[in-house]
Image (tube, rainbow, N blue to C red; front, side, top):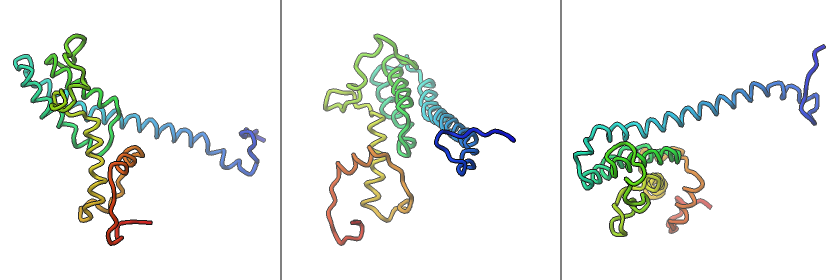
Length: 191
């Protein structure tokens, strides 16, 4: 007779449930591995085009105003479609900002040490507030995703209206804190 090992406080009747535990743990590990591989793929998918585009320009032949125009118009626009669909990891946004900083201040992929003339948070401020007007990718992505919630409330004739759009708790909280709703005929208000 083969011996069996059961977890503490597990009755013999639950033996069939515990016999699947190793395969369940392996399945969970495979899911985690697939998620990590997907995130790595997304990081490359988002940062790759920005890096390639910045390397094709002859930045050392441009002055800072020309490089600033390219950062604001091209490098900030490359990840817009991905930012619209999902919130990328912070690491991805940091890598994109690193590419933008390096191209703007040093004319190459990385700007180290004394090459950066202004703090990046200050550079991302609007021009009216003393910044350079560069788009902050994290805030721009948040605004783009909140726009989906706004359009779902205001325009019910969109083709994607029936889709189940996923938003984080923070995004929902910001949306509901930033908007007010007026009761009309009661068709879109649920009690």
